[in-house]
Image (tube, rainbow, N blue to C red; front, top):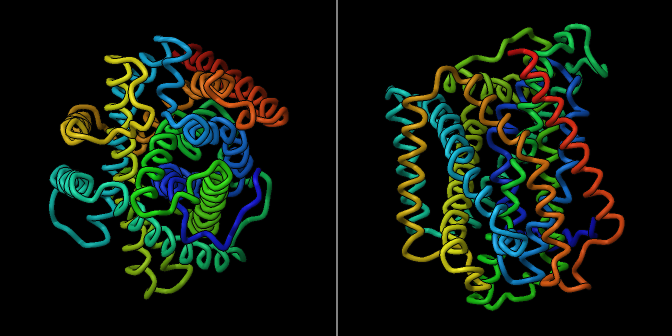
Amino acid sequence: MASYNWASLRNLGPGLLFAGMAIGTSHLVQSTRAGAVFGLGLAAVILLANLAKYPAFRFGAQYAAATGETLISGYRRIGLAPVLFLLAVFIFAHGFAVSAISLVTAGMLKTVLGLELGLMPTIAMVMVVVALFLGFGRYHLLEKVNRFFMAVLTISTLIATILVLPSVEWSLYPASAPPLDLAAFLFIVALAGWMPSPIEASVFSSLWTLARRDDAAQHGNTSETGMSAVVSDFNIGYVWTTLLALCFMILGAGVMHTGGVTPEDSAPGFAAQLVALYANALGDWAGPIVGLAALSVMFTTAITVTDGLTRALVVTLGVLKGGLGSKTASGEGPRYRIALVGILVAALLLLVFFMQGFRTFIDFVTSLAFLTAPVFAYLNHRAMGLDVVGEAHRPTVRMRLWSITSIAALGTFAVVYLWLLMGRG
């Protein structure tokens, strides 16, 4: 990975938005559940998932910085089928993704603020706030708000993690963890599917990279948008997400697994358990403070994912309608608000008609990403080899080997997963 300029942390943009997007359902929910049920037994899964997906995610930001166009245009240069497949995943899988994130955010909202509203009205409230923020705030405000709340949650999480370390059972696979049977494997799939995020979210990174470039040009900060700056920005955000995923797993292992606490099967119930993790580690005074920070980060996740999906749909439909389109297209314009409202309404309807249980719904959504991961990893690899990417900006031999190995590994596990599902049926 490229060397970091830690002095420029205040200039972080798309990399930190990526972290804000990832440190939501995959971290607050899935990583904590992994620690609560398996102790440290799934630490290797978290690390390997992040390592396997790194090249594909990096290529999203790198492609945009090298070409001045979105990764969606790169897919179109490969052929029509990749863009249609991307659109199908956005419409079906990411509609569920926005639903899942809104569900977790609503659970946090009810718990932290003590709202007496029902869950569905609270989810609708979350979506209205997201729509208003994105409709009027846009990229510059999104970046600033995300940076503040990520800092608060990171500091509190690191302190809480250090304090619970003495309570953790330091074993590669604790005897008190469930056996590694089919049920455990299915949870591992759900954990890895969104760890740190679905690979198609690399498209969002390319969109944010272009939006950051446009925003920086307006504010006279073009030095922040060169290839070196873009890669460093991405790397810092990626390492950040990996570190916090491990921290949440340790918190779950040190408090819930050691205490024999079973994760709740409701969004508000699990949110209350999450806040209790910090209160047990730091003291009762910390519960409300960290609860507000966690709520803020979940709102940030809901905002970033919804923003990324909205931009991606606008650009994807534009590419399908008019070819590659403008090189600087980052998904903004009049159609953005129309797509935004449509996505949020569809996500709410999915929850009304399809949600049967919190854990089941979250596992279903995150498992979908496990199956599509090798496809998008392959497409990102292909995109970086296109003629439009200058020779100086193409991946090194080591990065290409890393990418090919990751594609093979992700593809193998996806096939095994499907085989087990068919055998189970």
